[in-house]
Length: 281
Image (cartoon, rainbow, N blue to C red):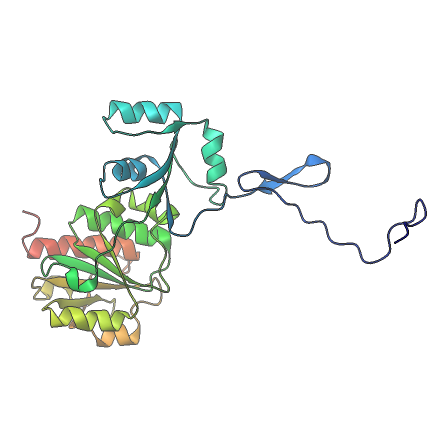
């Protein structure tokens, strides 16, 4: 193959310029200009944890296997002062920022961990007592994380979600849960309606929270064990989910705004139900 004459470009269409970088390094354009940060690649099944409460609770959980732990000098000192055992690699804050490049608003407070997911119990292994939560296609990780945090506070036995239309228990969800992931197991099912039927067979009362429910939650005869079913923002419970509930209950509000964010509604419902069942004594 002969070379083109000097000054003449090679024949054929020019390929578009595509910046490339190894994971965790900046994408650079011509002249070395940084275009954007590249997020590191993580193994499938890796749980990303960041933020003080999230990582501290994980370190205190003997069932959580930590693969990598990065901490700034100040964060490591705080772990030592709190008596939390760790083997953190001390790094500058920019190293953690780089690990979270795909989540630019992440508030990591100098702590970042890669960990294995916790073992999840099967539905038939759940204790037939207390309260469980069923999430009907709630996809916002901030909302699910806030629900997990409330569930941990009220001693919920488990949270049941579907394989599809549910966020993974990592990253933003874990941060929003503020350590709650270490205390409330997730049970993943293929079909929520079938899971509801299985719980009914084990004497669970299935209460769906719905703004158009036939009774206020305070008026429902709640018995233990009970499963509270929550729907997505805007859509609420799907029709098949509604049909499989023993009762549909609403939360009556005295103010001008009658509806609540699903995570706030969950906290109120858990307060009401655990009080009625005497689980907060």
